[in-house]
Amino acid sequence: MNQITIKGGHPIKGSIEASGAKNAVLPILAATIVGQGESHISRVPHLHDVTTMNELLAHMGAQLTVDHHADISICTDNLKNQTAPYETVKTMRASILALGPLVARYGRAKVSLPGGCAIGARPVDLHIKGLQAMGAKIKVEDGYILASCDRLHGNRIVMDKVTVTGTENILIAATLAQGETLIENAAIEPEVVDLAKYLKAMGADIKGEGTSKIYIQGKDQLQGTHHAVMPDRIEIGTFLVAAAITGGSITINNSCNDDLDAVYDKLTESGAIISTTENSVSLNMHGKRPNPVDIRTAPHPAFPTDMQAQFCALNSIADGSSHITETLFENRFMHVEELNRMGANIHVEGNQAIIKGVEQLSGAPVTATDLRASASLVLAGLAANGSTAVHDIHYIDRGYESIEEKLNQLGAKIVRS
Image 1 (cartoon, rainbow, N blue to C red):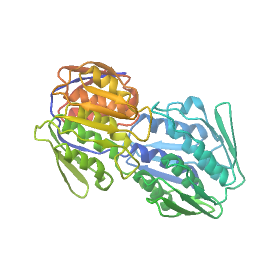
Image 2 (cartoon, rainbow, N blue to C red):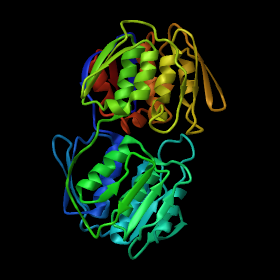
Image 3 (cartoon, rainbow, N blue to C red):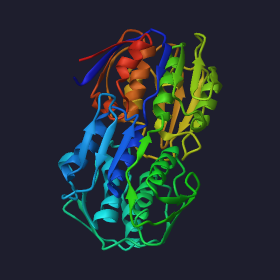
C-alpha cells in the first residue's frame, strides 16, 4: 500500500481529535534512556517513525509494552547494546537523539549517521561539538558516530545556529552530567519545552526552557515517570488548511493554540474565520476561495517551515498572487513541480516560490518527495477536480496518524492501495 487516491471536490466538514506530536514524542522516547525504572508515555501517535524508535530501543535491550491505546511503557535499565544500527535508523533523522542519552547514562554510544527526508543539509556537527564540550571523546568512521566518556561534565555550550534536535540532544545529556550546563542560542520550539517537562518530571533540574538560554544542573540519577505527549501542532495546522482549501469547516479538539499563532494569523488573512477555546480550534471558510498570503518561514514563534508546503497548496488556488520564502532548508520546494502537474502556477527563484493562484486544480498522478510535501499533495487533491493518485505515500505515514481515515471522517473520499 504505497499510494492513496483522492476524489476531489468534497468540502472538509466535522470534528476530529488531534494526535500526539511526532516531533515531541521522538526525543521523549530517546530520553527514556536516562531514567531508571519504567516510564509510561501516553498520547503516543501511531506513526512509522515512532515504530522505528521503538524498534531501536528494543534492539538495544529496552523492555517495551504497547497497550491498545498505543501508550508505551519503557524500561531502559539494561541496555546491553549501545548501538543504533544503520539498518534500523536509515529512514529517520531523529535517531541522532539516542547519542546524548546513551553517552550520559552508559558512557558510550555507536550511532549511525541519520537518514530521513532529503529536504536539505541538517548536519550533526552541533550535536558532536556540544557533547565534546562536555567531555565526550567522539570520532566518525564508517558512517557511525562513536562516542565515549566516563561521565559528562557541565559546560557553557553556544549553538552556532538554532537547532531543535541539537538542543534536545544536549539537554537530555546534561541532565546526568556533573555540574551545570548552559545552552545558549537554544531552540525555543514547544517540542523542546515538552521534552523538558518530561525530564523535569523524572527529577531533572532545568530552567529557561522555551527561551534561548537553558540551564541544567546535572543529577546523579533520574527516575522513570508518566508523561502525556503534547498535541501535534503541524497536524492541527494541516487539517485546518484541509478545511480552508476546500471551503469547508472543522473543529479540532485537544489543540495547542498558544503554539500556532503564526499559522492562525495567516489562515485568518486567507479569509478563514477562526475561533478557539481552551483546548479546541474551529475554522470556517464559508465556501470562499482563499485570499493569497505571503509567508516567510523562520524558527518558532514565527511561521513554521513544516507548514510551508501546505500553504503552497492553499495559495495555488487563491484569488491572486503570493510569495513564499523558505529560510531554513534549501531543498524544501520539491512539491512545487508536482503541484504544477495538477495545474498550479508556481515558479521557484532561489529560496522563494512565486505563486499565481488558479481557479481550479486538476487531479493527476503525483509523487511525494518528503513528509510535508506529501501532505501538500493530499491537500491539493482534496480541492482538485477529478482524482489524484499520490504515490510514495510512506512519507506521510512518518508524520500523520491515519490521515486518510481522519479525512474520510470529515467527508473526504480517499482510498489507500
